[in-house]
Length: 439
Image (cartoon, rainbow, N blue to C red; front, side):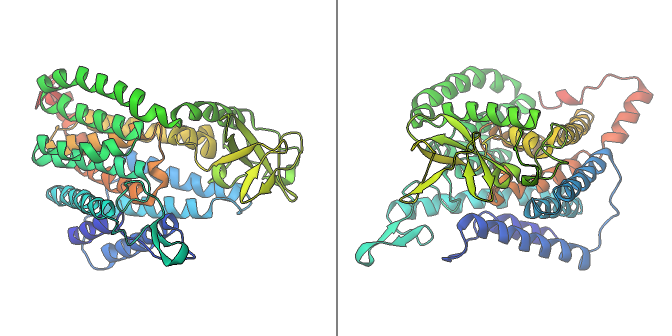
């Protein structure tokens, strides 16, 4: 069983399809869907497993899956089919992970480290122009890189930085200081989210394992993080453009922006309780753009006649670029670059509440469980994903999102003593000192 998960963990972020009809991101998603289906079928058909215990985390994960199906139905079965399918497969992957044993955790960490090693080797090849994935034939048959950014197998620099941050935490399980080897590719990502996630994960690890090291690192990482934002990320211009877009999207999700034409979307959506529906930020009736030269964020509404602004004036295409009715070139925000904004926009208040309950019961399990080294590393990785989600979208990239069900499953496995320990403490009347186990 663990061999299947090791192979799956290795292949999901490194698999690619070279095709003129399938984009790299779509190919990654397709592989995630097919590989997850194979893994789940194999785990059910070929291996014996213990019955899955009912617990509150499982219940609320199940509720989230059912709610996702409900949102798809409320859209008139028109919006979010792929999102619903990915969520369904992610839940199946989570329950398949529960069949692993605690001792299998180290092999999953090793697989993640090997993904980082493979990416670093491929980065070296890219730097000497031996990129056989992200290359294209230009004029006179000369092969040129599609994107000159250093990104390994990941396709996006930020995704590389986030995976390296997760890999750094995995390395810390075996030798904390070897994680420094991944600082350079994290730095190259030019992503505040990746850097903040890495720093937060490291601090979480040392808070539970070596409190003295945490106190030394805290001011150093705070100063280093601020310097990175000011001197590396901020000059790219991306950081300051996101908050206006978040504000506009949250305003539309909360007030249910008036589309002026009811047929553009199901009447059961576009309200703060259900949001705009699965995948609505990318494929819904409202799209968000920023002006190329001013970075001003604005809306565009889909109509049968094309994109129009809030006054009904049509957008225009010129030379392959989109322009406002007033001849301002715009770039499309295909993602809000914030998973929490995305959650509220697509799933509404009900979705936020469901995820809130999942996080609450995960916290309770952690609080009342023995803080083993494996559990601390898994928790630190979840912290990395949570922090990077503030400025990136790891859950909407198959090469990163596939890890969440596995990490959640491992977390639940390592907190199975939750109920037993809680009852023993109540019966004995002794204070809970387990959180100081490694302090």
